[in-house]
Image 1: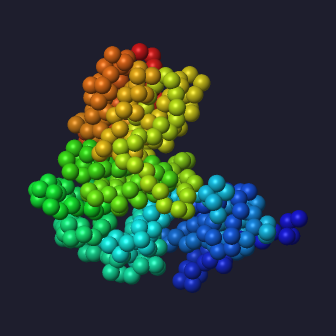
Image 2: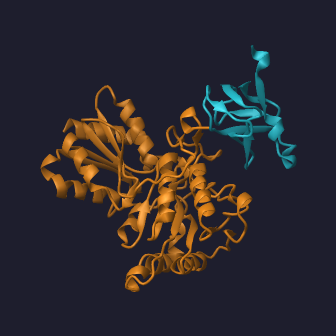
Image 3: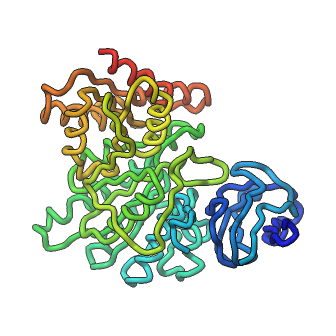
Length: 86
Length: 337
């Protein structure tokens, strides 16, 4: 089951000029667990130091699980959520 | 994706949604202010707009409130629909002539030959230790001076609908957003302001307060951030007092009817306001309740900032800013009378 899920990879949205920063927080989730998302939809916003970065859905499907809570810290490369592709 | 799917927006994104929509609809709509273009507004109120619109319509200005608010008044009188951001409401002082003597009065002074269809958008509120010149709400100041409509959203849904209505209004509208409701990473919002927001445009009419929580024992009337504090207090008290929470949403016009109806049901009124205690919103609400239904009033309390500059020190600011505990105490107090 879980091998079918698409992870939302935080490294994929890390800005070029913030490569020396390794930690960030999730500032906002815009989609609840169990909701449908479309590829490219902004599903969350992360904050790397003082820069806000939008996180697009990497696939169309259902956002089954958020792995990091709002205001929680995570490391570059951590998966933020899992999507079950439609 | 429909909003009912569970997609939610922060208050700042909801405001940007409305502004972008109105800018697409009409070339007359533009935004000017300090750090609103490249930076996206220091509280994210214009984030992302420069990606879609050019610098003629998303315009950074120098630190020159008198000049750029005056320019907005002139543009509005000439038929455009400017949105001018006053970065912190506390900075109104330097530009008060443009705000109060020009923006608010020119329709009257010209005998109605010009209108001033502009939005003055400004950040209000404390709770993050930014000292006395960056933390005021000043709701009462703008609501007291005639000529301006004044709106104060507490949720993303209301913020989008009020912003659409503000931009379309033919009179000047002061749109006061609380920083802590915007959904900024370094200033987390309480539970509540992030709501489902429809993709399409809609308006929230001015002068229509919203009963955010129904109850029979005590009415709490409030606005902005403190709607969420009041709801939290009401939930904490649910076993002992049934609290109704009325969110004013706009101060000018003010929905007296909803306040009076609620007080006629409960008989007990608590007004919560992050503005100063004296000569402001709290006194006005109590006066309206008394004028329109004195016999219904059993007990009244107000929970406000004291009449003092807002402290910088964290424990001192927390002490003076109305908290959930203060609301609980006031509700208990009027309920016991």
